[in-house]
Amino acid sequence: MIQGSNLTKRYPGGFEALRGVSFEIAAGDMVFVTGHSGAGKTTLVKLIAAIERPTSGSLVVNGQNVAALRDSALPYLRRHFGLVFQDHKLLFDRSVLENVLLPLQITGFGAREAKKRALAALDKVGLLGREKAPPIALSGGEQQRLAIARAVVNRPSILLVDEPTGHLDANSAEAILDIFRDFNRVGVTVVLSTHDTQWVERYQPRLLQLDHGQLV
Image 1 (cartoon, helix red, strand yellow):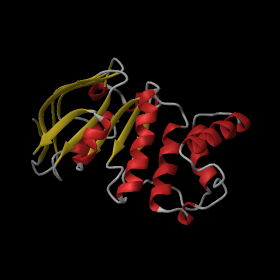
Image 2: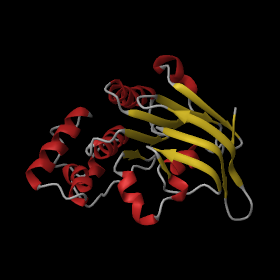
Image 3: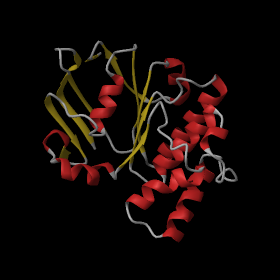
């Protein structure tokens, strides 16, 4: 499903965030991308999501070489993804429900079906009943749950998650990771970057460990 071959990402000024990274992720895998701060974890997630392009090497997702795709083809590729960022990227001028509805509205779902899907997504993350609230009224853990609901409302086959527990206490972090494990158990491929390895024993994921941009 996801195959990287000799991936390198070089930024202006010559900094190499990734260097010669090769890996394979099968459909249905749960993968933690681990490593120190600055190891290249976020860069790898952004490359898979086609938010950034590799400087060299190939990255094949669902049979398509991301590095070679035209910009016009990227929105169709991204429909397979659910993206959860560390800073949530929520819209604070809209309600909880409106935040979750947005991806469905962009892809042209009818209002009735979109609302049905959005409420189901909120139910899965434990936010049903809070749909009229503004995101600012939610706790940090609830905001993360809202970001997850928005990411999964399109029923993606791949969830790409960047440092989901960075600002959460241990109990909230465990609850969030349990949600990702539950999605993985029903066949969703989960690729999750984290600097915190305390959860490895509990969730038993596959590991991709990065050290200064190289896979170890």
